[in-house]
Image 1 (tube, rainbow, N blue to C red):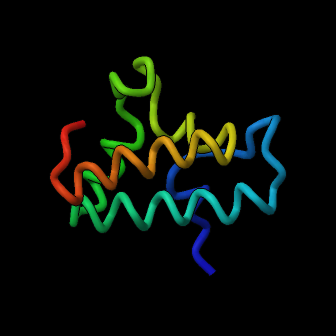
Image 2 (image 1 turned 90 degrees about the vertical axis):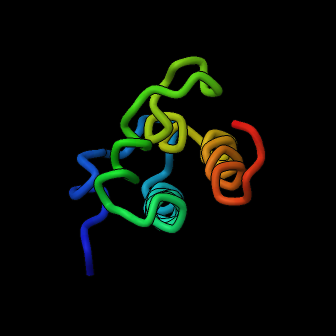
Length: 85
């Protein structure tokens, strides 16, 4: 099994249950890969600050809660399907 959290350099956030986090991060990572078509570009998106997240990093927002993960998915969906983000 691939240690996605290790590859991304993240650990469990204090408010996140480990099981939910284990489900959430691979989902976000896979969607970012689908959008960017390149691991480095996907990683750059996840670890770069984003204006729609109050200048926070998408990976941090996704780790904090399922709602945060949904916000990141919405941004990625906008990028994939061509809506303004």
